[in-house]
Length: 236
Image (cartoon, rainbow, N blue to C red; front, side, top):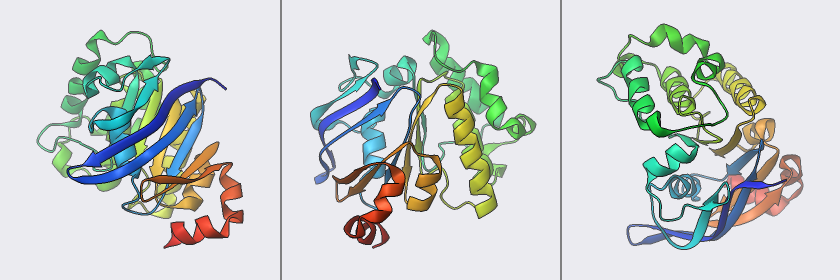
């Protein structure tokens, strides 16, 4: 499988603290990959490095055959990297519709991509009923729906999801897992940062386990349960 996204020996700091210690990973075309680990393992730092929100000290990030290591975040978004952050990034004083207008402005020079704008709402059709509501008045689950739908309006080739299932009731988690599967069915690759290893196995084709900035497992999701040492680390 061709690598759509590839990290090679990436080292990243947050302030004076080194978080990523030379990690390498790939996401293939039309592939769903989970990056699983405890809080503080480096999952969000990995996502932020891919998106260009944090600079890497060394190593490289390539997307669709292009070295994007030094590109700013908005340039990466226009190339086709979609992003839904853990805190959703929904502007509280703007309506949901206005949040989408900002995304469309960012995408004004974006050509191609895997999903048409209308497809974005097919994943979470209930978001269309929220267009006139201010971000401040959304529930946590609604904000996550808006964040993912907003990322989809950029017609991404890959979607980065940071803790999309965090804080959701089990029945809502199932709804979001179904949404992730629907996004993958559109031909969009997905990289998910996730703390719950069981949730990861429900959506991932492959899994990376991360601890203290190092990859400690990579392979098929169900096989991770056979590695007692990795499971002890993941469960703390």
